[in-house]
Length: 61
Image (cartoon, rainbow, N blue to C red):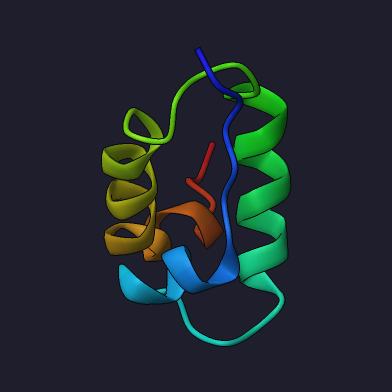
């Protein structure tokens, strides 16, 4: 099994903009999916990008 190798080009292909968010996404995925092949994180990355508005909101306590 090969290591995960993400590139900014791959993330831009699924809709990520040319911004610092690409390096953050690559860093997080390499940390948590370090020894996985390239295919498993793609659905996770797409889902995170489509629901990105939910991550910045805070819920009232």
